[in-house]
Image 1: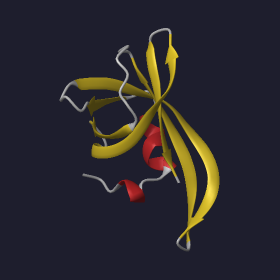
Image 2: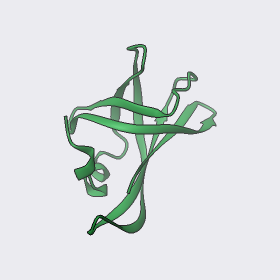
Image 3: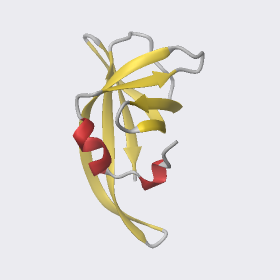
Image 4: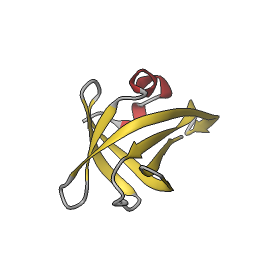
Length: 101
């Protein structure tokens, strides 16, 4: 599994529009599409400068996952553990955000 503390915005940008599989708490697999990679402010954490960023995922299911860490799987990136939270319902599902800072 990839250490998410080492991930940067450029790791996700090439995968914009691609599908990730998220495993819910009950073991159900939910496909999510990465729909946005948004640049945030530069942060200084423990003496290390890092560009903050937010990922926005779209899930076509109306079932809402509660905020929390979930295992993600992606064909090009492999296994990831990402903390997400629902941010809004849309006509065709739910949007989730993951913030890295």
